[in-house]
Length: 314
Image (cartoon, rainbow, N blue to C red; front, side, top):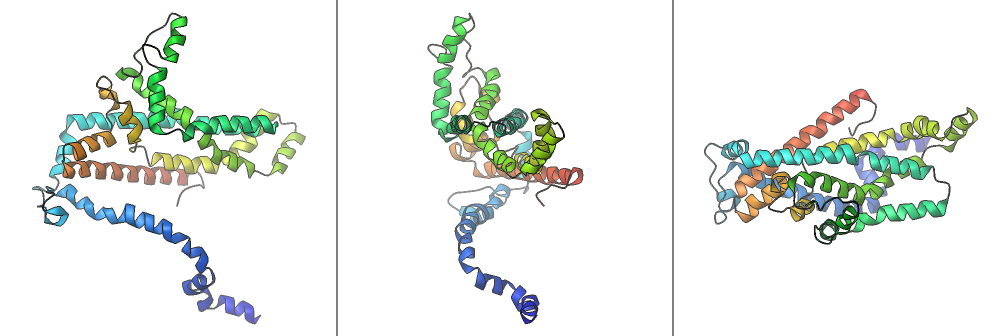
């Protein structure tokens, strides 16, 4: 009884008591906290240059404030090229979300039904492997496979009397090539989370469904999908919070003068304006606008999912 009273005392509920008993576990948090503080929170003081006319010689604090203070944001919404970059970013993100969100779920559901462990491991290895290919190698593979002169895909299409099509250079093929290659590269690795969620579903639910006469398709629909639905919801919320953040490296490497009308996105535009042209204030304003939109989207989608279901980030 005395031991129970000590546990309920304010001292034993305090942070000091928890830290003194789990200090070795809290030490593991130090690298993660240091990473976020150094690379995510400390650079936030530089956001003020979005409201200044930044001069490298004067530094962040010494640079004069813009007149008016929202001048860079006026430029942002009046630049035609930026509107094109924003449209391309949204289209690529929406295409990736619409066509790339379901394949990992379908792959995980299919692998969960495979009883042959050797075949299952083989499929997992083959589907996981492309994820570990670097972006530079991936883009080089795309240019080699779809080359109009001696590409593998071009030769196969030539057998059927099709092509050659300038897939890597024509603007109309850029979005399909980007999204398709992204699905192929990341589908298997993204399915790991869903496979882990499926493994946590109680086998008794499947046994009860079999007793009730359910076939495999019915068990997938009524047992597996409801079991991983919270995981799907959380990942959907996280994906919605990065709609404005399309990968820079792959898009930049795939850009050509002919497909620039479809391949110029916000991240490549910020890179060219900020680093190549040296307009740091304007590029910071664009990046800040990008982050604010992402924040609004993730809060909105989280609120919607919290109303429609019991699953949300907070």
